[in-house]
Amino acid sequence: MVAIGRMLRRLDAGARKGLKRALDTPRSEDVIYATDRWLTALESQEKRARELVRQARSILGTAHGRPGTGKGR
Image (cartoon, rainbow, N blue to C red):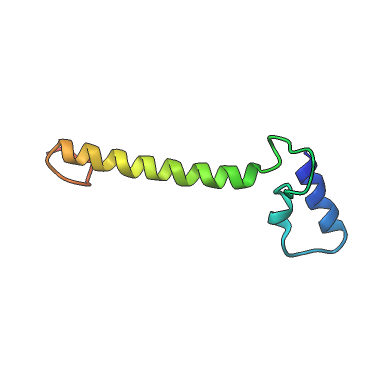
């Protein structure tokens, strides 16, 4: 919530660029809430999930004699 408030204050001040960065808590702030870096964390988790799916497809494809396809015979 603090991060969203920070972004909205920047928007109210007329800022149009860097609003996404405002969602990440600056390292200089004393208190960091679990939700303050949520957008960055979600993007990171999405990349990790895509890699896991890619690996699973590769493994499943290899198990069925068709590398990388993930499809049966």
